[in-house]
Length: 102
Image (cartoon, rainbow, N blue to C red; front, side):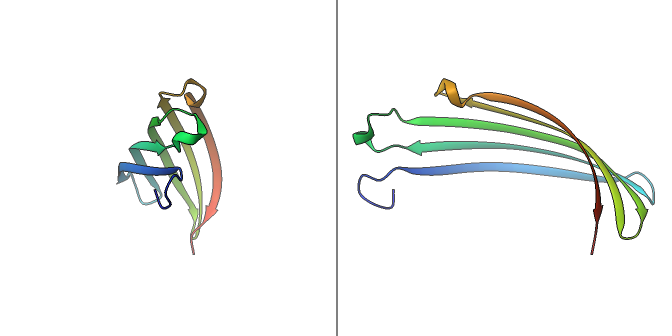
């Protein structure tokens, strides 16, 4: 807490990413992360302390169309566990994008 009686948050996290070149134009990557969020809540608010755990994973593949333009497809998974039932969720996403490196 920064002020006496103020609410606050402490986040602890770890992540790793692996890249692999499949060919001159194709490359793939995998990312995973784990985070813990400890919410320190002002007792005067009447709310309970809260701890969340967030798990994330992303698998992606890139295709270099022509420098500097590339095409990317990825799948992402996110799961949040919490001692506060309204804060729990699981999400899956698929994304395609066109990007430019500069």
